[in-house]
Amino acid sequence: MLSARAASLKPSPTLAISAKEKALKAQGIDIAGFGAGEPDFDTPAHIKEAAIKAINDNFTRYTPVTGIDPLKDAIIDKFARDNGLTYKREEVIVSCGGKHGLYNLFQALFQEGDEVIVPTPFWVSYPPMIELADAKPVILETREEDDYQITPDLLKKYLTPRTKAIILNYPSNPVGSVFYRENLEAIGKLAVEKGFFLISDEIYEKLVYDDYKHVSIASMDPAFKERTIICHGVSKTYAMTGWRIGYSAGPAAIIKAMGNIQSQSTSNPTSVSQMAALAALSGKQDFIATMVAEFKKRKDFLVKSMRSIEGVSCYDPRGAFYVFPNFNVVMGRKYKDRVVDTSTTLTEILLDEFHTAVVPGVEFGKEGYLRLSFATSMEVIEKGVERITKAVASMS
Ligand SMILES: *Cc1c(COP(=O)(O)O)cnc(C)c1O
Image (cartoon, rainbow, N blue to C red; front, side, top):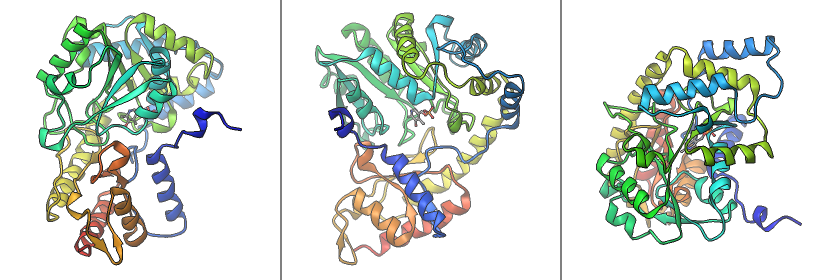
């Protein structure tokens, strides 16, 4: 009955774990939840007020498919202000979330026979979305020991005449890792030389720590910009996940094709949410620093706590709101009668026996690791750390 496309598609594992976490909490079970992929902060008041005003002003009809001009202009200003990048209106598009922007981009750019390089650990939605566009994800393994870098030598091993694009997500979900400037430079040069595209998912640009300054690959060289599509959105920066507004910027021909796809599927992003996003991008930005300061406290505590578990290592994130500790040390050990053979088994034991929800690393293409979101209260984090420490101690 179902199409082959739908039949082989798995739902997003991170959203599935969040749902399981919520269901257990609803049963009254005290879960320490590290599953969340969204800020635990409320959308700032001035953004909510802009949306309420939009409703009262009856700004409730269809808008232009690719977004209203004032919002496009605010996005253009954001790129100029933060990244030193100049875009025209026809080079930006507003979509129903950053994910939707990526989806439309893949539909616009990829087809059968294309290869798309996806570095590990990857955001869970890239490979299935590439497959939905009939292209092939080519998984490029990066390593914790190498600071999760892609060197030109490593990348060259994966390039073929079929390489259509590489996905760069930095700061990354799930690690919070970033690429060194010289590596971005080398990747950009290879893209220009070999003619593939750079898909730069910069959704965590503003959530960065310890003096790290985000640099968009598009801003490093005009030739890189011609090959780059930046995918971005307001979800993470302004605690606006439910509003569903994302935006992309890149060459006009690609943006136009994304708009055509959007016009035949969702039409415009929600009118009211566009007004909220306009207030977010053009209004006062002090909310971000407040949120980042709180995230930093939690990050520092979690990194220290994970590293204090015997045999566990943990990358100190430069951005985003996740840690990705390496639990390979417990692989092969036993909990009661159960062999901890994979990160999935470890996740199940943590949830069932220790009421702690995390996401298995294998879902991000990295077995032996766990992803813990710190978009949750310090109280929950402390409780969860205690439980995870106890769980590991009880595995032998
Ligand atoms: C959250 C996220 C997105 C998009 O989120 P939206 O809510 O759809 O805007 C895109 N990429 C990564 C890596 C993310 O973590």
